[in-house]
Image (cartoon, rainbow, N blue to C red; front, side):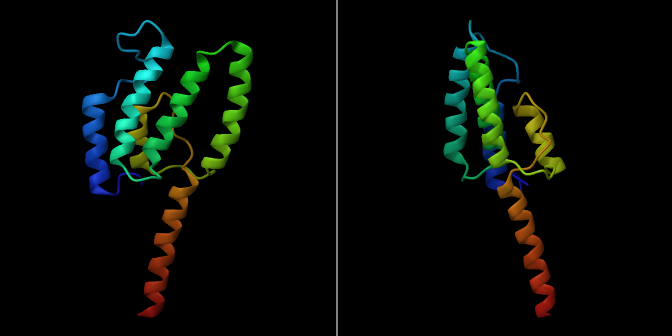
Length: 138
């Protein structure tokens, strides 16, 4: 999953301890939009430490976009929510994320993680194919 790389795990753990607020928490901000802006800056720090693509960064970005959309006028929010389904459809497969990814995402997003990104699925399939190739060569 997203946390198979030890350096990525350490970067995420460090970020989570020092920068992450619980989903739905708006720290000491008077508005959701200011909270989103602060969260965006925190996310930028995390994304600088992890190589793309990354399951956690991707999920937090999608979650943050949805939070920003909630601050918009209801008619614009509906349009953005509809467009976000296209973006998420391009990112996420129908396969479930690994148990470790689900657990990690539970701590950093406001929505449950029920689908794995295509790049994660591709990585899983690549590992399986490599193991099959290794068996065939033996």
